Amino acid sequence: MVTTTRSASASVQHGEATLDTLAWIKLSSVTLPLPTPISDAKVLTGRQKPMTEVAFLFAEVATAQGHEGIGFSYSKRAGGPAQFAHAKEVVDNLIGEDPSDIGRLWTKLVWAGASVGRSGVATQAIAALDIALWDLKAKRAGLPLAKLLGAHRDSVRCYNTSGGFLHTPTGEVLDNATASIASGIGGIKIKVGHPDTRQDLRRLSAVREHIGDDVPLMVDANQQWDRPTAQRMGRALEEFGLVWIEEPLDAYDAQGHAALAASLDTPVATGEMLASVAEHYELIRHGAADVIQPDAPRIGGITQFLKLTALAEHNNLQLAPHFAMEIHLHLAAAYPIEPWVEHFDWLEPLFNERLTIRDGRMQVSSLPGLGVSLSEQARAWTVATHEVGTRP
Image: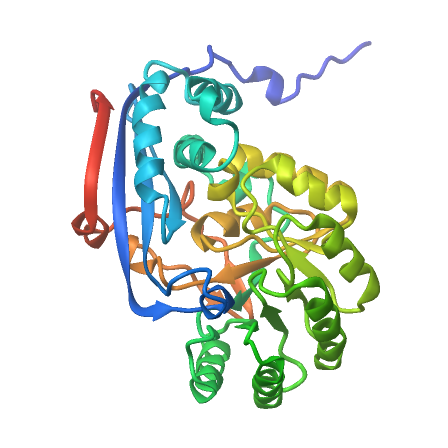
């Protein structure tokens, strides 16, 4: 006698897949004022003025079936109006398209503006739309973005930068470090790059003594050292047991970073200023970084970020995405090698939600998508909008 069994899955009735189309997109240019002008080494070398605001490009999308998503890009000091202008020129190419085909749509948008290239302002404008499509896709699935991508963890190590800028007196830096650690943040990063390097060493010594040897500590030179200075400072900094030295050299000096990384015990981190996967590949190809620091809005969005992290994992690199923790928390949670995420509270007024931090780690929200929605304050700081299509 033969007994036939039927699995539970075989009895499930499957209908046709539910497809959808993009019906409405709204672009918003939002200017976030900073309460205190921000200075790092680029200001001390005269290359930039103190930063007083951050320009954001928000993209809100909605489908014919009423599903919605949100994404953003940003620019510091200059470039915000250019991102908004480029997005306005290409955005209508998305109306009527299937929002699930994100890779194809990224390519379509790039070709719509092909004469301005595949990096910089052009792809940073596309990034806001790309991120909105990923947020939409995760929301349709009812999953946090990290889970849609395939999370390796539900929380990510986090460190604070905003308390250690060069305009901040040392005593205040120490107070900020105490407050950060008390709030649950796991690591402290301070800026370096004073014209007198001894001032950097005195400041760093004070911070290390204040927080103790067990708290992870990083430094960031914001590309302002030349090769000899980076070599001398790298050797001098070895005693502090740093997690990494960030941007010791010009962001495009892959060979210089590679030589420095090979000569130091302290890991070298860089990548935040690069504007494409191709530029990051030069770092990887030269062995120029122990820690790679891509910024999804800067390199064209989540679609491009995932291409880059596949290369980074293949080369056994650590990952510490730059800025925009609301996006990068999800992407870091999906990276196989234990990463870091950068804590900045600057963006909090833009959103109704707040990320949870405890025991040195930032927690992935259980909300679907990115888990954020625009606040009324963000609406109040909006300086221009552009809409295409009809909202369902």
